[in-house]
Amino acid sequence: MPRKDKVVSLVEKVLSDHKAEDIKTIDVSEKTPFAEYYILATANNIRQLNALSEIVTDELAKAKIDVGHVEGTPESGWILIDAHHVIINIFSKAERERISLDEVFARK
Image (tube, rainbow, N blue to C red; front, side):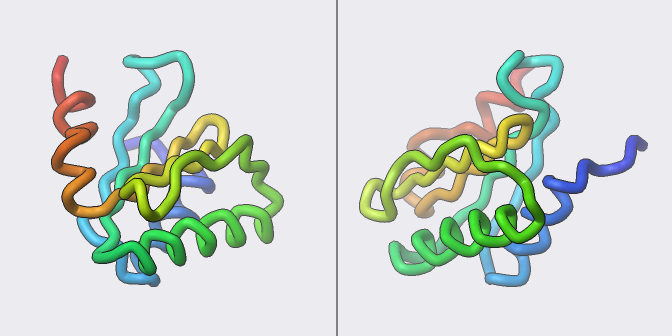
């Protein structure tokens, strides 16, 4: 099994430490030219969604990992953090079910 990317490991730890739920890392390197990994996580409410987004971006900055941009708002139920080869998606429960990225990347 290949060694995990340092960005992936950092983001997974931050999300886990801050009580994100259903954290999944998907290797998308052979499915999309835009990224190597997608990380999906669920927040319990709007406040947690906002906090997780801020904490992840802060921790990436502390580790001197560039964040290309952040899209979405807590009120929308979905925040996307573009760390170039790693795309972090933090969802509300309802929005994660509606978007179904888990299923999109599970298809062959």
